[in-house]
Length: 114
Image 1 (cartoon, rainbow, N blue to C red):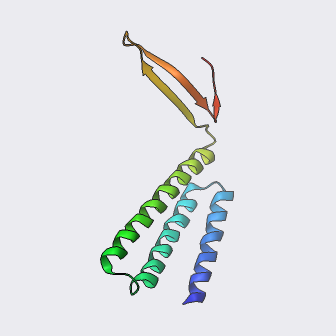
Image 2: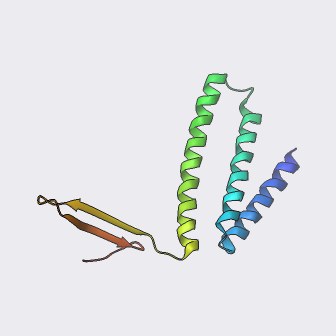
Image 3: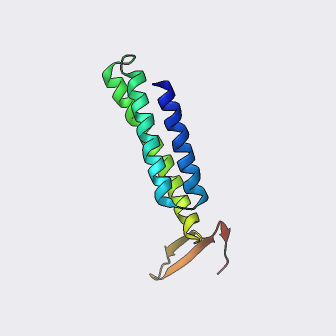
């Protein structure tokens, strides 16, 4: 069983590397999906007998939430990077006359003066 997990983890790493090097977001997403399932399965296998069930599910939910947030941020960064577009961040405020005014404009991490 340990050998299978090590082989599966190695294949997922190769799939993730292949998706990253070919800039294919579908391959990267597939590798991340199977990686999450592998972590989830090993978590159940290891902690099922060690923790009371309520604590097990609370801790498991927190771990999965943190993992999903981190992976979603990374997936968005990769999607922007693979598309060749630059990420744009704009802060718009409304002045006292009701006009929309751009306060900050960030393109590719650099602030642009308007």
